Amino acid sequence: MRVFVTGATGTIGLAVSTAFRRAGHQVWGLARSAEKAVALARAEVHPVLGDLGKPEGFVAVAESCSVLVHAAAEYGTGAFAFERNAVHGLLAAARKRGPQPKTLIYTSGTWVYGNTGDRLVDETTPVAPVPHVSERPAVERLVLEADGVRGI
Image: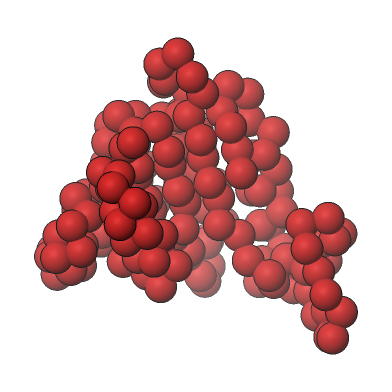
């Protein structure tokens, strides 16, 4: 299986990338710099130099993969504009498919549940995001409700 991972040099993305590699899959990972690309190559992940905010730089690779994992995160001013742009690029790539729908896995985060204290939460718990991730549930819905794509 061919897999494309954004955020492949981050904590979650690198763990996801190496897990797919250990399972015998071919993995391509988005890297923002040549130094990070070298680190991916050492992990036997094919580096794709690019920018999350410019999906045109990685969409062609994503189109050639059957599983897309969005594990990248941007923070600060305009972070969710970058996020939406990247997700729309990944969804467009996922829709260019063969006989079966592609899978897009969107890694979100527990902050969408707000301050839960000691209470356990899971995917069925209503969201109450903290302010700096307030737009994340809308991006999650883009993935989960996308036509022609298996969104997770």
